[in-house]
Length: 194
Image (tube, rainbow, N blue to C red; front, side, top):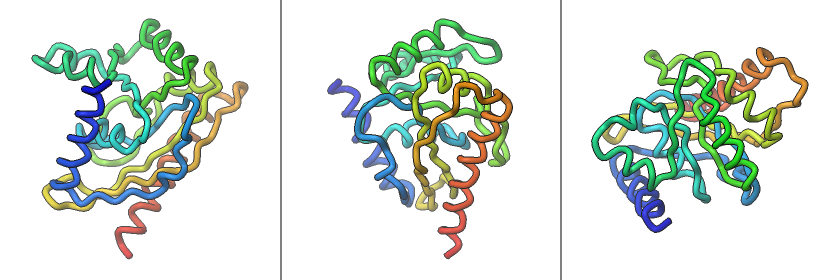
C-alpha cells in the first residue's frame, strides 16, 4: 500500500505544478462502502488524476493492451489496475470487479470505453450498467472540463452519487449515466467562463 500512496502523492504534486487544477464537490465522495467512480475520458491524464482526487484507494479497470508496455504492468500492480479486454464481455474483469465491490472497494471506470478524440461525450458502454445493476453500488459521477497543457485550467466537477434501478432498461441507463456526466462537464465549463 505504501507504493500506492507514493504514486498518489506524486500525481497530486506534479499535476498541481504543471496544470491549474480546480475541484468542486469533494464532499460528495462517500467516506465508506463500495461505489463506482465514472468520468468522461479525454486524455491519458484522466485516470491518475481522478484516482488522486479520491481520499480512499481505488482500483482501475484498464485496457489490456497497456499491460504489454515495459514497466507499466509493475506500475499497474502498485496502483491497483487490472486488465479488461474491450469489445466483448470480459468475464474475468467483470468477476474481479464484482469481487472488489463486494469487499467494499472503489472502482474507477470511464463509461465511454476509450478517450474521446474531439472532447465530445460518447455513448456509455453497457459494462458499467451491468456492474452497477448487478452490484447495487452507487455511481459517483465526475465531469472533466478545461484543457490539459502547461498551466492550463482543468476542472473536475464531482456530482452526487446515484444508483441505477436493477430493472432499468440498459439503453436508458447508458443515457442516464452520460447525462449525469454531461451536466457536470457543462457546470464546470460555465464556471470557467465566469
